[in-house]
Image (cartoon, rainbow, N blue to C red):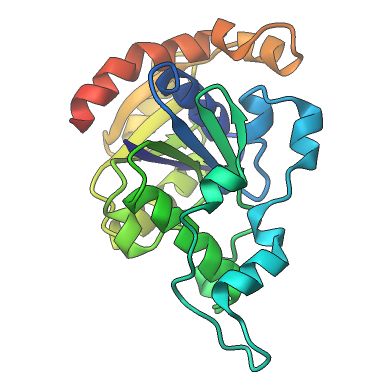
Length: 251
């Protein structure tokens, strides 16, 4: 199962990724990819903070990238570097969860076709196309880190949105990019839902495209303050209850 998750900052996509990863990892290895420059997927997955401080984002491994892309003094480099060993060597492991932090991936519209960008996209492609294990990617507010070839092999793109105009506009922008990349399965998830009005508001704005919703969970504050584990939150339980539905829809 290959899943990508995107949405406006603060929409809850990282905690959604973490919950889904924890649920899936009960029975299988899961590669968790933090592709959001402002992401904190490791903390949300409850990895040790001291271990997380030691992680160097993949994009900052300059010597490795130079070696694998065979970059020369004239600036020429390979567009298909060898990356198959990277997930195992450079991930932080906890149980069945393998965490990879990518760092900043330059957007396609910046015109950058640099070794770092090529290396990271090759790594994502390898994870989606070659790995048999589950892969969950915490994307920034867009899908630019995916190429057309990898996007069509993603089982699901979940787009999280809050019941606000700004969040919905971002969700609509992400949908447009996803359609251009021909991602086959796009799922809108309304988050922080506290009333029927919130559901109706999102459905009205998205023209009834919202597929699932998650009720507002005040216990997430206790999780953020480290009073309880992620599994003790209502948010996690809601994702866990959806797990069997997600699996049956994917198969």
